[in-house]
Image (cartoon, rainbow, N blue to C red):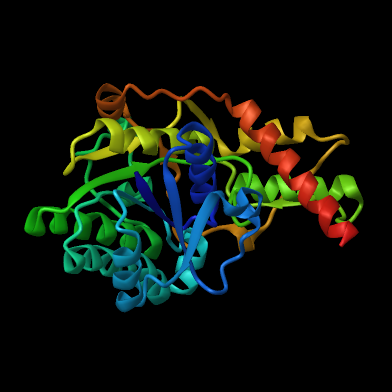
Amino acid sequence: MKVLITGITGMVGSHLADYIVTDHPDVDVHGLIRWRSPTDNIRHLGNRIALHHGDLGDLSSLVRLLNAIEPDRIFHLAAQSYVTTSFDAPADTLSTNLIGTTNLLEAIRITRLDPLVHVCSSSEVYGQVQESDLPITEVAPLRPASPYAVSKVGEDMIAYQYGLSYGLKILRTRMFTHTGPRRGDVFAESAFAKQIAQIEAGVLEPPIRVGNLDSVRTFADVRDAVRAYWLLLEKCEPGSVFNIGGNRTATIGEVLEILKGLASLPIEHVVDPDLLRPSDVTLQVPDVSRFTAASGWSPTIKLEQTLSDLLAYQRDRVRREMNA
């Protein structure tokens, strides 16, 4: 079997590559990268994966890539995934996420290949909900509250349309908050962990700066998430859409306190107005029963372990940067 992962250099893509290489060593793993893509997250995999240059914005490069690999499965994870950045660069976010996804699906149609395709949408498509709407199911209204969320609604719907119109074997997921080692620094819990690691190392003066601490999220570990994605294409029917998420619900403030408790010295924090979004989604608790029934998946890694591993990752990064 041959698998193609777009976004293989990111947190989720690199962990998915780790999972496949370790648990399914008979699978050939291929990754789409741009010439400027940082490869720190996958360098340890060496020649166990094959990397191919291309760009979601360039249809011809995708056609050439698919013809060369002829993948049996495609995990489409590449995206501009930072909500705050999407407010600063809305058109670029829409181009990367919606047009890029359209180009990938169009390349599959043009090449007449027949892979199973996972298109990774987002829980952000549901926008702000009320407590009476919880838990959020797959039939909840889509109320995007950021350009990123709009781009993910578009990606979700173009995937649905290509399956309907052209018979592409596409499965869509709306993944709720997932985190762990390699999480981008712009996300709250990773930004907290990085600042704690920097304060411990004496390269940053306290306090750490935080944004909205009242948002409620249901957390999953990224390593549980990639196992879910594999089971998605193993067990579930094309044309389906699934919520996927963890089983631990907490405020961002509670996550901060867990990380502060893991620190080697007392940590203070202060709210930075620059870290508050123009509009925010503050309540995300999923109903994942549809996916668990179809796949048999359940999360296994506790939030405390996830955050401990994230802090260890950031500590290691700070040490390497200091020794560079």
